[in-house]
Image 1 (tube, helix red, strand yellow):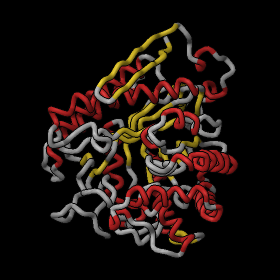
Image 2 (spheres, rainbow, N blue to C red):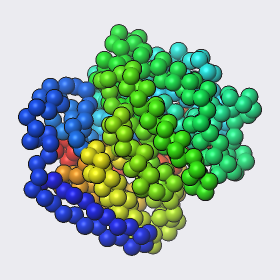
Image 3 (cartoon, rainbow, N blue to C red):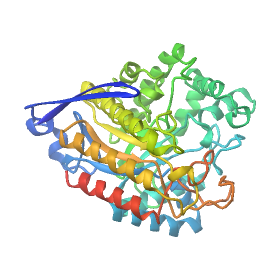
Length: 448
């Protein structure tokens, strides 16, 4: 049975309909599907299915953006092994990882950086990426690697524009001007010089040979997907619409460039979905309709989007969950229409009361994860295009070092990027009740 999912959402009111038709999926009915018969260790696409080893690839993953940083530091190697082992034991085997941060003067950005200046790269962090991939391969885990960032915490597009102008980067953490910051970041798509620097970086990484394994990246099935950027947007909701055509052209041009370098791996955009595309589901669909984008991504942030108030959890939770389910269904419908797989690759809720301390409760997070996972599992049973989830975020053995929970250069990494309090959304190695919820979902997905 293949499900057709229809949804209607008005924030505060939700209706969803699910209808099923007796239609076999292409992977089952097509005897000449090259994906279905090869048994390849590379993650591939067959219609609205991700495939690996000749069968549908369902997964539970996490965001592990700092992985290459652990691989590059002697003192981080022990932590890297311990965290990968714990994730593997939980059934979490798909890691979304930052491939490159830009050297920047932005006040709340990670240091050190891999992309030091146009054409200049930090070899230590490139080796760290090699080490990470080698360690993941030992555990049969796969990576989604993103090359850029719309936001400031890794330099990203704002730093490209600073390199171009020679002026300090536009810093929203000091100016408070987020609309201006987003519009400035979006100039990146319209700069030919910035695009050349960006493609140079892509080429360096995609065509690299792993210094640990001796295997070229293009031949390494440990890599599932190259991702254009973290949460790329056309610009701000207020002023970005005139520049949507440039954003769409950038997705198409970059995806084709990556495909010209590497025919073995998938390409994805890193989009948040409609909320990251001027709050327009039609534009999200339009931007991802090209053949070179192999599967869809979307993110979901109930608190950030005003659906959930961590200080009034019992009062606001029902609306937050209703809107979350409706948001999922909207994006599954787009994937169904485009006949592409889709992954929910960022979502999360804070600890109880917005408390960042390690010992703070996780009742509200556990409740949210358990209910949203149950809903997603229903969609998987209905054979929707949903193939995986990457929760935000894995903090593992990282711990905040300061009473103000602000990350400073040299501090251990947690899953929370430097612009956010350390402990905000991180799932730590000792969060037993949350880990139990995650393992249950991973067991379900693994047995599909």
